[in-house]
Amino acid sequence: MLKSKIIFLIIMISLFSSNLNASYEKLAFDFSFKDLDGSEMKLADFKNKVMVVTNVASYCGFTSQYEDLQETWEKYQNKGLVVIGVPSNSFNQEMETNKEIKNFCEAKFGISFPMTEKVKVKGSEAHEFYKWANKNYGKNAIPKWNFHKIIIGKDGKIFNTFSSMTKPTSGKFVKVIEEALNK
Image (cartoon, rainbow, N blue to C red; front, side):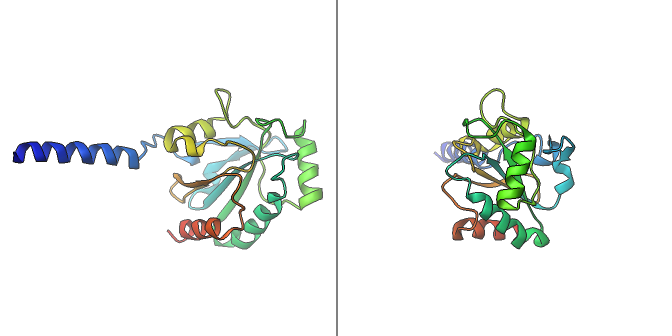
């Protein structure tokens, strides 16, 4: 009887612990993007910082969240936060060229946080960062729409994710950002 209880306990621990801890053969710092000007943007340059990686689009109903992302960036960048905008046409709502995207973001929203070149964020042609996020965090890391937010902790692992519906200035989002910064 005791032996079967021990075996049951071992099985339960192994089942639950494997769901709680992703393998993380790589960390977010192992990836890079090109920025809107075509220069390399290494996420390794943001080690020991908290990153908010958000897939963005210029023609989306959530495009006003650019203002909230900029506000969050300005408020927390000196505390170790990096906001990274990742333009994507995966939902058919982004401008054609990186130059158009850059001009739109700077002129309309005064964006000063780092922006990558336009990439795919879902499916088999997704950028490797998004494939990694899916592998290590599951379906909650896959953008269902524009302005999906992936928070990367100082350790380079996914700390949390938020859907397009959550504004970057919402209480629940800010609470998680502050928690990640203080970890």
